[in-house]
Each structure stands twice: as structure tokens, then as C-alpha cells.
Amino acid sequence: SGFIIEVTALALPLYFFVARRHWRGWAALGFMPTKVWIVALALVAWLVALPLIGTAEEAFSAWLDLGDRNPQFDSIGELLDGPAALAVAVLLIGVIVPMAEEAFFRGLLFGWLHGRLGLPAGVLLSSLLFSAVHVFDVVLLPVFLLGVLFAVIYALSKSLWPAVAAHGLHNTIQLVWLYAAVNHGMPLPGYNA
Image 1 (cartoon, helix red, strand yellow):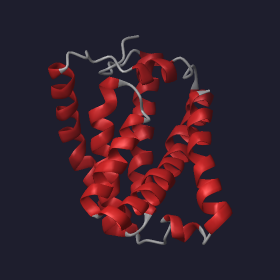
Image 2 (cartoon, rainbow, N blue to C red; image 1 turned 120 degrees about the vertical axis):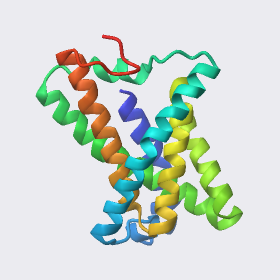
Image 3 (cartoon, rainbow, N blue to C red; image 1 turned 180 degrees about the horizontal axis):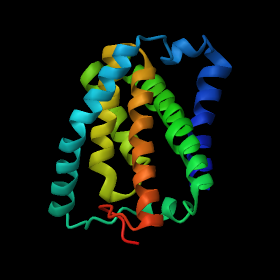
């Protein structure tokens, strides 16, 4: 149900404030064609940033004494009871959610902020809002840093597709790792079966 609420919350503003009034096509939201090597470069940037984001997350959690339990893992983990559930979760959380979130937070919000306040303010404010909708305190900093990364990828590539690919890969790897923790006892930081 959280997924449906999130996608609806992201889709309604896109529809009412962009599509219905000013629709200029998907390219206007940032879904521009791009080269495969640019997408590959975005995935490498995500891979390089991941250990830094993880280190920042650990320091942030220790500093605020948040513990390492990620409530998102608990709620999603309850649903991952077999391979079919994993496939559905990858489609929803690994494909649809990254497209919806990137369209809203980078295509619409970052694009608007960047045009009015400049690149640094656009990156920071859109990333703060991206982090805020992920609600749980233990993920605020890592989600903010991912938002910064995705906004920079979008700003440099002029296309949402590289950011969607990095975001989708991030979510998919977390899902597969969570599936392995839930169903096969593999250790996962932030999740205690």
C-alpha cells in the first residue's frame, strides 16, 4: 500500500501541473535519448559513490544514535516470500518507482528549482525533498546523498535515463539482497530476521 501511495503522490502533481496544463512530451520532463556509454558511466558513478554513502550512513546513524535497523527492509521483507514476489517487487521497486521518482524529483522538481535558483540550490533542495519522502530517519542521509548523485547525473547527461538506470540498479540490488536475507538467512545490515 505504501508503494501505491508513493506512486500516486508523485503521479498526481505530474499530471495536474505538467501533463494537463503544459504537456510538451516526455522529453520536456527529461526523458531524452542518451548514449549507452553515458548510462554506463552513471552506473560506475553510482558504484564509486556507494561505499562513501554507506560510510556516511554509518557515521550519521552512530552520531544520532539511530541504530542500524532500516524499517523499509522490514515492511518490504514481509512481502518477499518467494521468487514470484521478488519478480513483482523488482518490476515495481526496481523499474516503476525509479522512473516515477526521477520524473518527479529530477525531471520536474530539480528542473524547476535549477531554472529559478541555480544548480547548487536545485540539487540540494530537490535532494532534501527526495530524502524527506523516504520518511525513516536512518535512511535520510543516504537517500539525500543518492538524490544529489542522481541530480548531478541528470544535470551532466541532460537525460533522466542514466539516473533512472542508477536508481533502478540501486533498488534492485537492495531487493535481491533483502530477498536473500529473508529467504536464505544471508546477513544484511539494517535487517534482522
